[in-house]
Length: 334
View 1 (tube, rainbow, N blue to C red):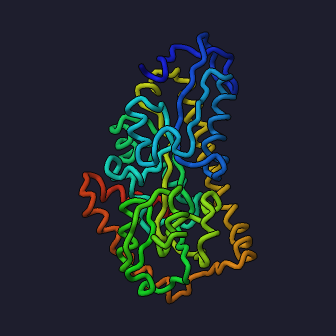
View 2: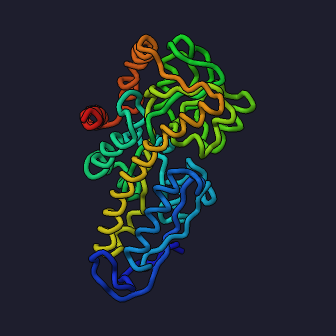
View 3: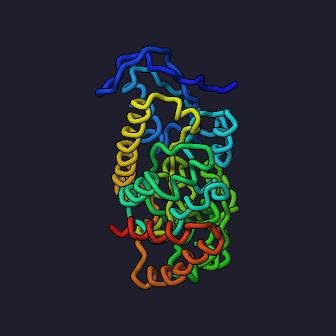
């Protein structure tokens, strides 16, 4: 049985200028792997759900399954397609096999802030190969945003590329694993909720992670050195609804979900960027070495990572990949 009946009408006078039709309220089962205390949930997912419910007068509501309650991080897309969920906040790099073109965001050196990267991602989800890839996977993208550029967290200071050799480093998916390998390290893909234990037990030597997300996983408790000006790739989240369900929604409801999604994307991006400065100050007070790479170190790292983009093209071997990479480069350079 489908978890969402076909919506034929909306039951309330829709707020914010939407039209009114008669019917019954429906609930979408929405899953994600972040906890409700994570900034992505507070300023993104839960904020958007509340805004949609208010704007539709409760005609569309949500049953939220955070913290992998309905499906593991790598199974969110399957859960939507199989009817376990109706919608999900996908971590696209966890679905690189199904969404190879969307993994372009994992490449290093492209954006310097979440707001810059989110503007580029939103443009690419509005039209083009990234959108078409998601539609082909059976889901419709509502909005997308990125995390701030990944930094390195470790128990020792990592600077020049040679410092990384033979280290086991946590990466988010295969694209970011290529970044680690470019510096002689071993990239190990571990979901965010499992990273704390892996570092604590010595399974990992270092972690590539966005600073705004560190508090959500308490990684500052298990590392002693955190970089602040690196750019070791990005990570994109995309809110999706199963396409057959989204098409059954009234057009004004679809439009409002998309409009509120665009607002939420930029809001959560700015919230993340704004949080970083305060976090760095807090960590310094805790005795953590928060450091900036020197010009020589940045040059060494950049030189090592310069071929990752070409490696990405060869690895995914997908039609349109080169055009996606060039468009991403152009959009993030604005």
